[in-house]
Image (cartoon, rainbow, N blue to C red):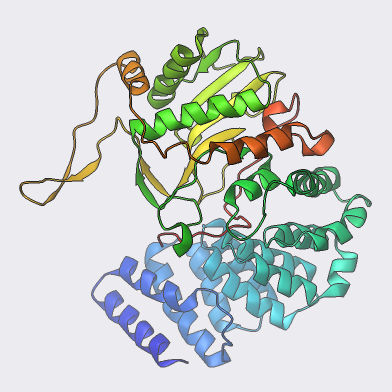
Length: 443
């Protein structure tokens, strides 16, 4: 075992002795997190033994028994698979992948183990590593439909379009339970990539282009902060502003124009930020405002959301289906977590965000101390009207022509390549926490 890992395990034990189980967990997690390092059997057992002690305090008896089974039988594929599965379900894919990687090494031809390992790696954003492991088992790929799909999907998430092209025909055949849905997903991604290849670079920084390929949706604004230092157009921590809200509205207006979409009404969702933006849009576009009902609406119009993650479950269910002439816009979208619905158009991606009308952090110019501002408690109509009076900086809309070129090209495509905003039926695509364009994130 590497010296740093030995030191970390000792620190975890000391934290446990002091009653700091959560601190001990964070330390052990850094040791057990998946990497390409090779584990000696004794080291593997030692690390999981410490994790078992932590689990006895923080987790239930069933989970702890699963960890202890791995400690007692570190070469038991089923025990490794079971704890890997449980860890994945608990939102710990990095630890799950370590257990599943050992299971895979012991049973390399087990499609079930390999597929579960790949799913964990995919959730971690390690799509290239997932592809490497899948390609190393060609016989599994040949005989297991889900393995073929996972290779095609993770290849796209690694910016490799040739591998899924070769696999598409085999994905469109067979009798797998979800075959039609999965094959259609890959075919649609490839069709969208072909549709925009002349106007989008689809390289490691083309966040807007790849977002369209993967979801059929448009990203309006690219963060300028740390663009070439690992962020690639996404925000890590951001305090949203009225300027950015207005910029989103103006970019949305330009996007709708390129798709020749005329908005007859704005739907206001039952969430304060969404209502503010809906009222601002209705004023800007001079169209009626309609309040969304729990049952939803099928009439044409633009559904305005501040952030889909702020909506209640029943409302999300009511907006997940496409209807003719109906467009879903979400101003802010979290990029570090998967979500059941992707907005047809979104303004920006964030990891941590505070809305303009919420309490925000600022540095007091006199004391130089960080303090929290008071939330804006004005009514939605007042904030909406004020928002439209915001003066944008001259460079705020500088790349709109590039956005328009992408939208215009996509809007002239046909079949599976059409934008989500022009879809007339079917469910909206889910948002994955993985992407062909990687960004740095908070731990």
